[in-house]
Length: 101
Figure 1 (cartoon, rainbow, N blue to C red):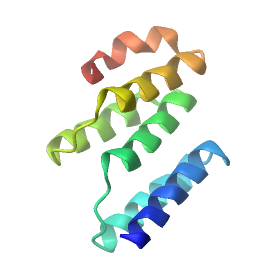
Figure 2 (figure 1 turned 90 degrees about the vertical axis):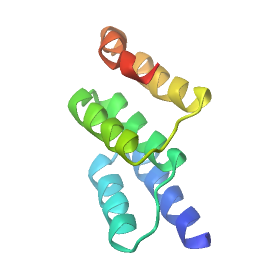
Figure 3 (figure 1 turned 180 degrees about the vertical axis):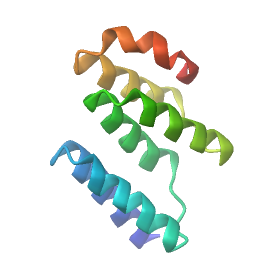
């Protein structure tokens, strides 16, 4: 549990402090290879990162991955992702990610 929390924290840190999506993706891959399950919180951080850099294709593909894994997002997590789009000037993209709502 502690290791999982640390990896999730690092994922968040890479996205929000460093603005480094590639390291966040590497953290997620590390979780996969060590059989540590990513949670909705982990994916929320990654999806927010994609939203902030405007990578809608990766946002959509990663979201589809969470659906296939039956990872459910609560309303506050979805709003964080949508707010990241808006705050990064991607207001027009909100209609493209309506599948989140």
